[in-house]
Image 1: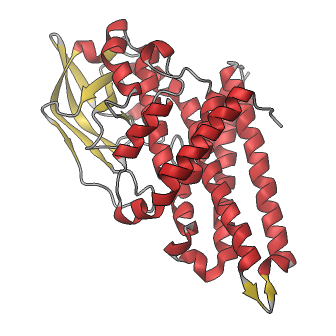
Image 2: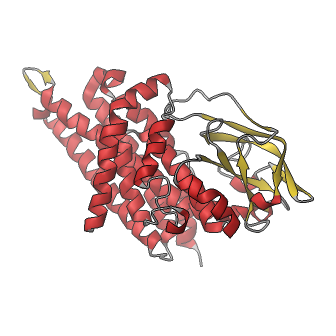
Image 3: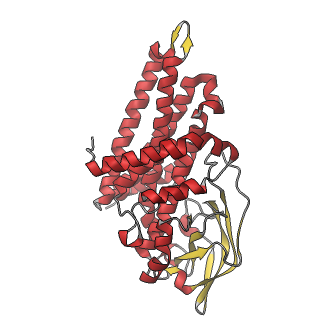
Length: 378
């Protein structure tokens, strides 16, 4: 098992306290009312959670990907949906910091790491999900600007976020024709669809982002033309680890709830924890989540070390941890029986929130494609 440094234990404890104080007490209310806790999210910036692996020069904490995994595991123990949004903001912020110009970093990054500005990440489109390189949103050069037309789908924070990091087509079909732009919320021609009615992740808005002759200064293009897809993919290894960590934290909370319930719930004159069927289910859940944690931590350390097989490991961790986390949460609901189906106990919310983790940041079927291609290469 990975031994944490003293600093990492402190980081973990800080995230745990924030989750216990600012997230967990309100998670059911936010889910029920579909409230986006923007004030709480902004407060997380005071702890460095808005720029976890963004450079110190940009106001970030410049921590490792492993440190980020520790943070998101703890935050999601308090509220999966809100933790996941903070992860998305970090991915967008890091992209500007890593690939932007000096002027862009000076103009945008410190405002993002302080959460003066909140960011959304715009890659997926109505017609291109897993096949992200087939995106159709266009950005046509017009003097010192680009004019964007098209739409993005399933965008977390759409309509609320201040800044949108957008992938759009500036050239040929395929990955090499895609560029990345920074677009402000109040830009003329930028609009948003209705908030989607979702199974889970209700504490964050999800909607279309629509571009109708949106004029963006060429100075807002990140990097060179045609490099956007490369930038997008560079962020996905870490994003997959973050979402896996959110699965792990949520599933651990579900397991902990199930253990306490099994001790208290009486059937046939005894606590259901006394029945071997329940004991075996709890044992399997604990074993599988512990195995998932080991794999996740190993993948994060490989990414930090820039190991040649890091991408494969990130895909393996995302696939295994999100599948395992959902199963553990679903098993926890089963232990609660009919009560698990009620909102009062908080388990059904975790099941709903974790289900999408098997889909986003690349579906788990795409993870298998990445893994097998790497295995069979050469």
